Amino acid sequence: MEQSLTIIVPALDAGAVLGATLDACAEAAGAEVLVVDGGSGDATRDVARRRGARVVESPPGRGRQLALGAETARGSWLLFLHADTRPAPGWAEAARVFMAGPGAVGRAGYFAFALDDPSPEARRLERLVAWRCRALALPYGDQGLLISRALYDAAGGFRPLPLMEDVDLVRRLGRRRLAALPVPAVTSAERWRREGWRRRSARNLACLSLWFLGVPPGALKRFYG
Image 1 (tube, one colour):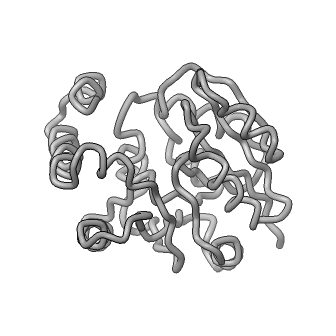
Image 2 (cartoon, rainbow, N blue to C red):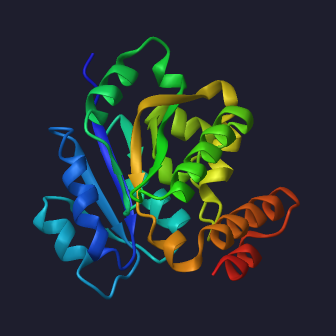
């Protein structure tokens, strides 16, 4: 049975990177593409419309934007992607095979993490993320999330959190309902280059640790910046 797919991309001032992501999304012929804009002051909405995406306006906050995108989507399957994350060639076929597989409606898929940087630091971080996914079952939002509407609703969907909305959802899904897809998604390394590889990674790890210690998302957002 052919499944309908909606690709949901939350965006805020993402005009410089969104085009490449939407170009990659075009590999899934016939998929609905929603760009949920959180009040951009740049060309984000124009970039989205020029590439045939439907633009939905939302209050800022990625958790809110993702939840609104899911509410608006028409597809029986949902693929959540960050605006600076583009799935590699072959992703649409991998997604099709996953969606058609036995029991797929009760599982969620995620891509391998990759960065658009040739440095050893980038390869090291990719290996650490791969370990985190294997050992802790914690893929992040920059790896995408492919999930049936039925499972998304059953798990309670994205909550309107200012930060850690991805970890919150995958924790509710749990290890047994998560599956790695055999294709990478390439994320911009600009933030690591700008802030420093060690500093950015340390901040991400601190946020995750504080989240598990029960620090409220609003406080984490102020810390994360």
